[in-house]
Length: 460
Image 1: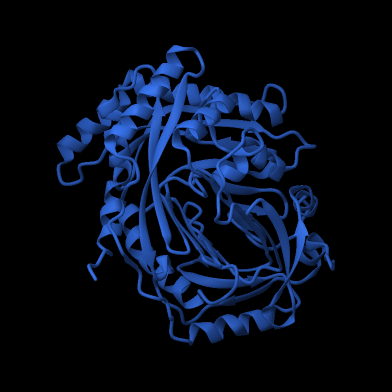
Image 2 (image 1 turned 45 degrees about the vertical axis):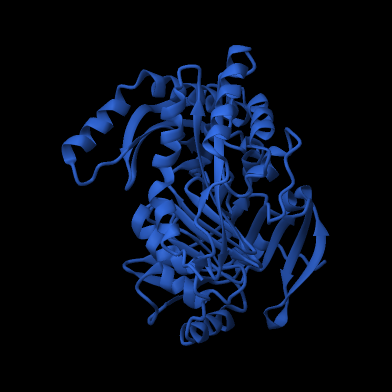
């Protein structure tokens, strides 16, 4: 297989930068225009938006097998069998010389790791038919800076890629109208949730675990392109770690508010778990403030949050320099469009010999969406949920070629594989949890998104 040294290309090829002078104002509309281009992926990245397209190479895992695809002349891709070790060898951090701002993405790897792909290293996961992992090498991409989009490339073919993008922008977008054939509703009956909740409590009382993140799927049969709903969803949620990925027969639309791990310069790593939720009341400021204060002083939510902080401190300590793990913030309340969340932050310094992607693989699934202790929690989740989560509760993000990067937790995210669509919600259950309150928390987290989805339902 012809495998060029990506770091050599990146450091030796002059950066090609051009403004995109004529494109739609809304990101979702721009993505729609670019949707025919292979490997389209978008990250909001907390105010540092980037769009990847036409990756030089990409790795994809599906049906228990991994393949690597390499771009050929004519924008086609050759395919060969691969594995995770092969992927790790090709993604080792490099010392990069670049004139691009160090903030955000500046050339490297973008993709997602699904929950089930990550969990399989610890447990036997339910089979997942849709893509379980995707990671592409993007040396040509768009960044939003100074109120407009710029095209960057580190490839010899930069001018040809820029021409192809411009040609696509002058072509009318041809997304298929999205619609649901049935309402998006909980796959479980309420009695099924109640039964699963009680089983969790029984496991906690028996000493098997301290907390379980019990989730349920809201499903529907859908037609058309999920991307055509993106503008509405991102306007609704205004999520800092939103994103979108388009593969063959698969779309992932994320409205995630949660950072999983940020890999900063000088090997600093940070994680910001969310545990604790109360609804927003935007039309009643007094009630909204009461809801926020209720969360702030909730002993149950503080206990739930600190369990996950302790778990993540332990996870990070495996890869961190001795004595570098610290808690920067604890029980902070952050307000989003639909809910208030309790957020903490843990920081550490990554050991020099640790491969960042290997650390990401090992740290996933995130503790905030499994429970504690982590492996036993995942075993209980597999037993009670009895279906693959897919991308949900995995991670979407990027690594620059120098090993810096940012990865979210894929909550508040919609996945569509062929005609099957799912939106998931859940919450951490502890011994102090109340069944009705936990069920309502599930609804609070996604009710606005579910209602928006159901607005696309039309009776034939």
